[in-house]
Image (cartoon, rainbow, N blue to C red):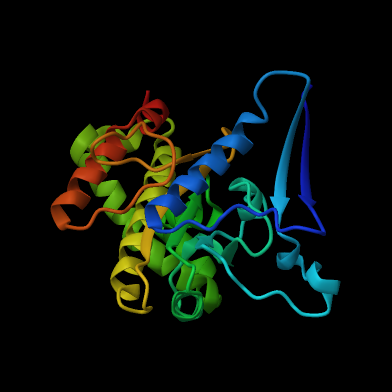
Length: 281
């Protein structure tokens, strides 16, 4: 068994944190490097060590620690509430690097939108907003189960808050199912792991659509340029997957499609991807 040691380290006499990214591309690249570094820790055998350097100012420890640190995140992340996806750790970041909002199924409710808009409008160094879904998402799985067995919706009849989550996701699930049938034929629903494949298609489609929506909603919200991106954290593989319509096999975050034609190409790439094909073979 491999031993992994992750150390958060700060120097009380000097600022040791990395320089904040200058633009969205640099922010996305830093997040990708961080996620790959954390994923690599689990490879091989023996002991692996990772040191995450912190700026003492971000912990309120500089200058005697008498003042609260100023918020200065370079990216905001809309993650799922799933406890298995610790956002800062996934991206190899420490406190005050990321502005994190977590809600089941990455839904864009009013509280979520308000929180992200606040971040864009108030943090001058913020350059990127990321929607991070994850494989096997429970909220998306529940929506898929309702889609496959509509009478299951009755169990949510009196659970209005849960219905609100499901209703938003069902639109994505319906679209994902139609695309799978168009690409793989109407008999695809009879394959042994169709449900698992549909969950994964819906997860990544939901993340990409949410990122696209955020880009439209947040454009002009702040004085600096902010872009949105999406990705799916594959818990079992410890990597981030964000299929592009040019190449569905590329790891790391991606910017969302921008036009209906791009979304069509994206949906086809997802359904034809090696990951989804693996569920259906």
